[in-house]
Length: 150
Image 1 (cartoon, rainbow, N blue to C red):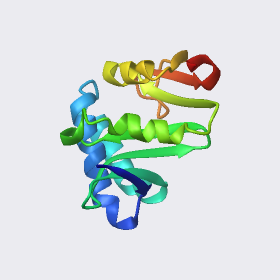
Image 2 (image 1 turned 180 degrees about the vertical axis):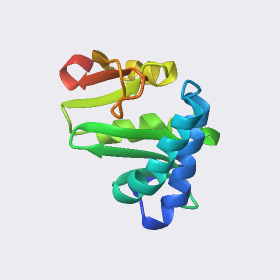
Image 3 (image 1 turned 45 degrees about the horizontal axis):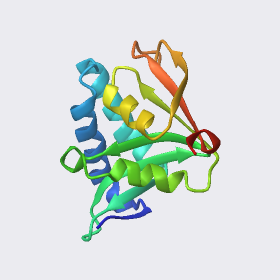
């Protein structure tokens, strides 16, 4: 049985492993040098400085993480060894429990993520040709609205 809790500083190495294995499993479209540059930024800047909710097992080991700002999902990653266990859905549904609108951006070249969000009621609202760092990885902007999902 998994539970949710706030990430702790001691989770940093495991959270990076979650991010790395998830990206290796789903982001084959990334150029090797871009993957390395993004990994460095995630390890050194993003994970140590942002707040996350993690899904942990009975031994308090994180298997998935969720980063948010307001009503926006900034990051949702599930460890490659834990995929298919419903952890992404668990984190997302917990986050949107008392929200009427949730937004998220996903790589267009990651059909698994796009399908995941579509199954949970998200609709594409717009597209950006480049990612937020100006790299040639198109981003789909998605939105979920409680009224539309009933």
